[in-house]
Image 1: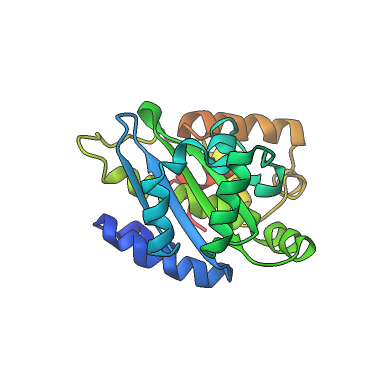
Image 2 (image 1 turned 60 degrees about the horizontal axis):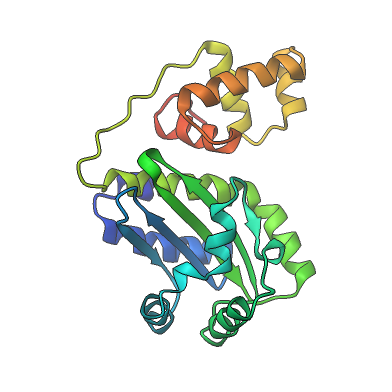
Length: 230
């Protein structure tokens, strides 16, 4: 699916890929929504057309607790951690539930160049314990795929010049490669025979060169630019 995402040449192809990813993660819905620095919006995903139309008609982007909460954060957010206490938020939640959005959700906030902001979200109907286990198991993959999705969507932004990736040092390549393979930091440090402090230096250097928001984003960008191969 990541290969299909990399090879997509039109925005409409992202819709089909979002449906495949929904089935892969076994959730009710998977959605990607972005806003460019100029205010252009694009979305794809598996919410019902009725809910999408209502969301746009009522301009819910201005009151949606998920959008408002994630805009203030840089890390992935479980919807239960957001503020749903206001009457507007509760009314919005009731409408969302009525349209099958799901009582559980997990969103990855993503920031790109020139003020671009995006959300990559999965939602589902289940109890808290079940959801917590599922997100714990899929968390890293969801973040990785979210950043891949965003990188591809940015390619379709009008007049956007491609960004050149800076080369990584051999040690940075090693660190990123083992992290991409699912090694923990302790395992990577042990494999490379270095301290975790030294490993942190390599990771932060690679993250800076790649313009990544966090380590998972750095791994995603290194993979996408062909700087590492797993």
